[in-house]
Length: 153
Image 1 (cartoon, rainbow, N blue to C red):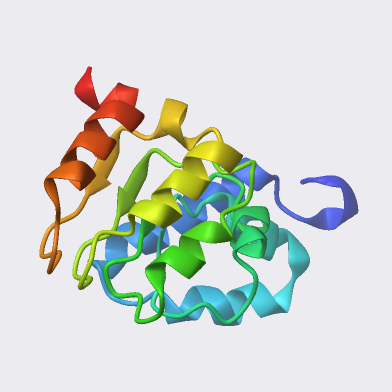
Image 2 (image 1 turned 60 degrees about the vertical axis):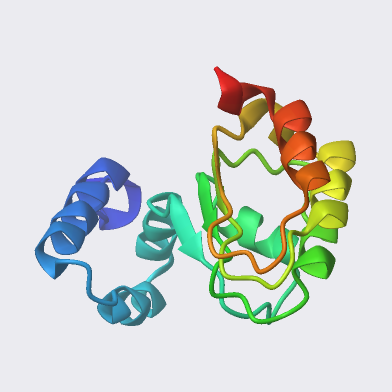
């Protein structure tokens, strides 16, 4: 038993991963309910999130990275706002390895340029998905090739 009578974090992580394994890709609504019960479980569930799909931006983006410190994959393919504006607000500490920008009318070149200036993402990103983009220019392809060195290795 951990101090205060709770289970150690590694035990909770095991329970969470078992719950996720048995869920078969469905929504994990029960984790939200359980997380409200006590802070230790919330802390463990937050550390156990490695991938987020963002559909709307109800709060500042930096809070997403604060809440989920192990976040490595961000899917913005379902985001229905201005993608460039969202990318302008990426926190400097962002170190994701996978970014999905699919299903948008244009390639968010100015947003990605801002990320490159303000974050370390160019040295951590190994996967950039841009399928079903309505308009991609040859300059966008050149920009990707020149800017994201790890993806060419």
